[in-house]
Amino acid sequence: MTYKKYTILSFLIYAIAFFAPSFAMTIEQSLIILTISYIFGAAALIFLYKKQTIKLPFEESKMSWGRIVSLGLVGIFLAIVLQNVMLTIELYFGGQIESENTNNIMGLISKQPLVMLAVAVGGPIMEEFVFRRAILGSVTRKSNVWLGVIVSSLLFALIHQDGHLLLYGALGAFFSLQYLITGSIWTSIITHVGMNSLVVIVNLIVETMGIQVP
Image 1: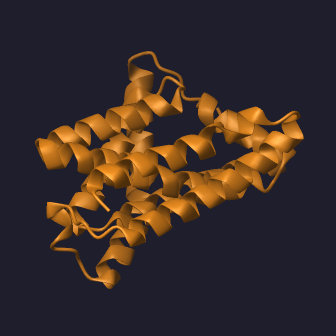
Image 2: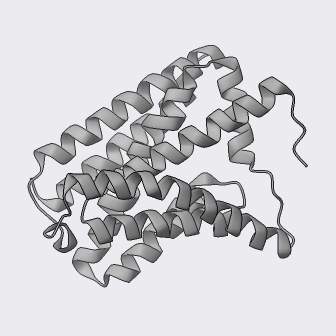
């Protein structure tokens, strides 16, 4: 399989999973479809990744699995720190601390708890394979690796559509650096899944206990 074909199929799988819920007749149906499409989309992208054999230049010197997992786990907490730093900067320049994307997600989870699987697992896995493995990889193969980081991070920020461009752009760049340094997409996947899971769990605890966040 050529890298071009791999990239096109990755986009196609992601688009199907992303837009599938919009064809539902009711909100209940759309939430079930969202969960199923995101999980199957993630599984399909993993299968596609395993089937293709072309390696990117920085994947040639992949770290050991022990380091990949360790740096992925450490990255969860670094990503949370980065998130808070970016939010502080955005607030300084007149931004808002609330994330419309996060609020919408928590609203969906309150209606259908299974959506948590889509948000914490399916979504992050698909985003890493599309924005890092496919987009960053495609740009890197034709141009400079840092241009790939910029393009993939900018598109990653725009897809979230909640005004926090600096926040999501910085996270996208961080995930990209993890990928480049370790030579494995699984590092950023571990961090992304872990960070999303932690954010969802914390928000659920806050809502359950009725804690008022300033």
